[in-house]
Length: 274
Image (cartoon, rainbow, N blue to C red; front, side):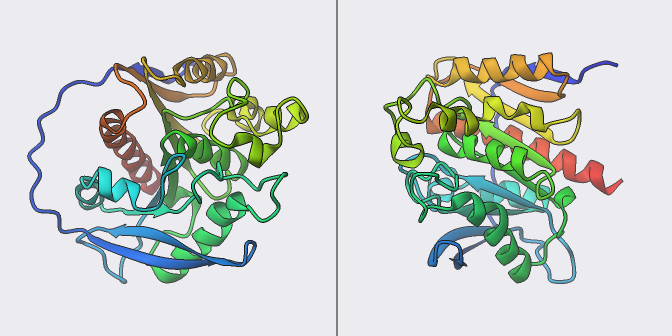
């Protein structure tokens, strides 16, 4: 069987954006598991109507960021929502949650929030396709890790997943980004660092169980771990798209990468309708 894996390079593309007509809502959701309110940005396309069901892409921010990052740094996502006729949801990941239910901080349950509570809230308040076939998730850096982590563990909730400059293996970075606050120190809890690293979760996948895309710049400090994930997926015969391109850990890279990832997810949604 031919394995459908692509390693792609970005190319320059001139795009003339018309005035954005998508609507931006800032909403307040509630997490029962953490007993607190959490904000999110929700982008609905110009075509949005209660009489139609729309696919949803959950778009996660990185470490030290917040729910406003994507719409503030890449306002073009409004145009993508219009172009692909989908809803984009940007939740708050609380600075450095890594989108986990932390074994070290029981009050931090962002896996439960994003993969369960937030989806229930969005499906209850917007006209969505309430099925994994109409739901995807991606993000940058910490959010790239979070998107794959959540999708691998909750394949009943997401049909497609992506990552941009994701920290897909946490173990090489034991002293960075408050990871030890979330997992405990690597010296004391190496088993946790193994368990919560995406690269060690590929056994949860079967061929085509998830539509997968991930990207990383060749000057990024996460590049090597992304290449390692790409090679492991190849070894396990898991179809995926891996984008290797010039660039570092920057908004310049992510603003390009998100175009390709949303196009990929739009193709997935269309294929699932057939």
